[in-house]
Image (cartoon, rainbow, N blue to C red; front, side, top):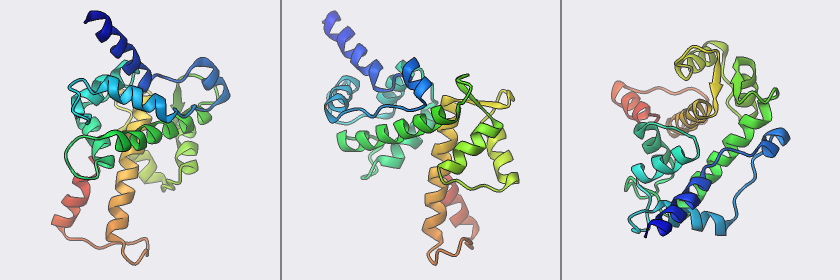
Length: 199
């Protein structure tokens, strides 16, 4: 039983492993194969119920050195949980994993000095490339919110958290921008509803 658990933990640790030194030098993350994703999903699914809950996913992310709060992991799940059960099944996990791989790839592409962090200029370039065109005041507010230690840099987990927020905020805005005018009007309750879907 101990060997089986160790093997399962080893496979789970690979699901969100930090990119290798070679991948970092090349500035790209390599997508996983469907077979690998199936194996990782099974290893992470500790209660074998065919779904990953917030605790199971948080543990797997931590094994890959992505230390996220339960709130942020729940936010990540909510982005892909199509039936609002608070967990993800295999196909949803595949999309979630693809999102994280894409964000990691963007992070590495703009980490030009290979420091493992993005400075403010690199973050701005990365967000622009990802399609998040922010005016300077909005960018400064976002950067400060995700730089809690005031280091003027963002780590990989911090950058992923920022990108996750912006993805959700964009979806919430588009839901109210029915005329695609780039401007919306909402009452207080609508604002709270939209904001709660971004956290």
